[in-house]
Length: 215
Figure 1 (tube, one colour):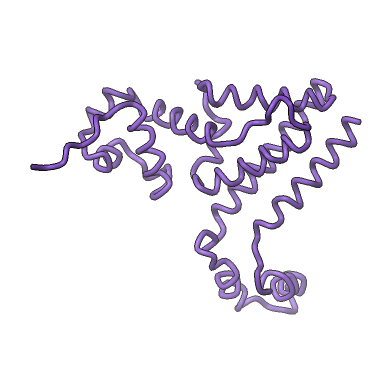
Figure 2 (cartoon, rainbow, N blue to C red; figure 1 turned 90 degrees about the horizontal axis):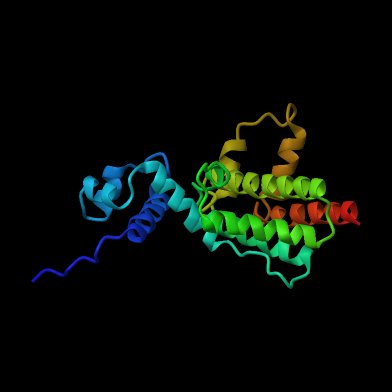
């Protein structure tokens, strides 16, 4: 007797879509491929989630729900730092998500609740409404931009980025590009190099600046 498959629900469709997008990317995600992954038919998917846009909205909700929100009683700077570090970690798990996080026209409760918590935290840090808007824009531009760059670096997830960079740079003219060669030789090719260490360095620079501006 064959094992009975779990009952298909909206939640299972969305979780399956996130898992599939993690494997093949958002561009390759189609209703047909999702149906195959869930061992069902495309029309059954549409019964639970009426369109691909609705699926993407739900996927973004799942990603927002995974990001740590600033708590109401935490120091604002530490809470925002924790949130940004968490966001980067979540976006590394879901590399397709960064360009979609702020693009949804029908945001759900996880999306809205996350934004409300961040705004509340920045206001608690003594920022004016204008300063709050600047802070949120700069922080998210940095977080999403860094996540996008990590997702597109060659062989980054496999830990092979330095070797890939070595192959790419092997044909560079040292006289024409001395600083590029210097950076690669003296930093990128060194043991233990990790592009990601620049994230918290940059984040602290931004938080230092915001703290001074708010003060």
